[in-house]
Amino acid sequence: MLGFGPFYHMFKIVENERAEEFDVWKRFGEGQGTVDDLDRLFKDCKSVLDYPAAMYAEQVYKAYPDAKFILTVRDYERWEPSFKSTIGAMNPILAAANQSKLTPTIRGMSSWWMSYGPLGSRTGETDLRQFFDKHNELVKKLIPPEQLLVYKVGEGWSRLVEFLGVSEPSEPFPHINDTNDFMKVREELERATKE
Image (cartoon, rainbow, N blue to C red; front, side):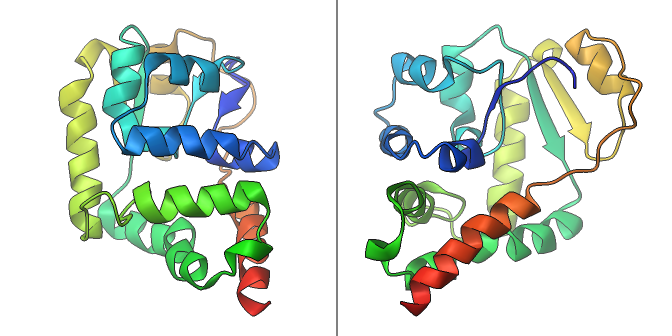
């Protein structure tokens, strides 16, 4: 819609069955990821969003210091229930899943998420509010103001297209989320917990 596709996102990894990419993200979680790794992961993409890249803002910025960054923000009180009912609900499902019944890609996602996703066992984070605040503050301190748009979900096109230097589309601003993609993954995980 704005000309920044194709994009990189966790559900694209799953959709395209690129299990090996989760091994690369694990290396980032262990502090061993490289610029070459990011170049390979993002080679066919014009933009990057959400997890797993969002967990490594510092590494992505160091690799692409001239890139523009958009930090989407919401009030914590609205974000928390949304997170807990979608991707945050994955932890107990993943913990209960029979990993041998999962596809290699879902197994890779499961392993990365449980270790390095928000509140993952290897992140050192245990408090969701603290994780939320810490991430937002890190991005605001890390990215120079002229390269960062702090964008409140629901603002519409104006500030977004101005920041990106593109024309405003004639279509209304979309109100789409990843719930449908998430539910497909969740269904596979829930099947694996019953087998």
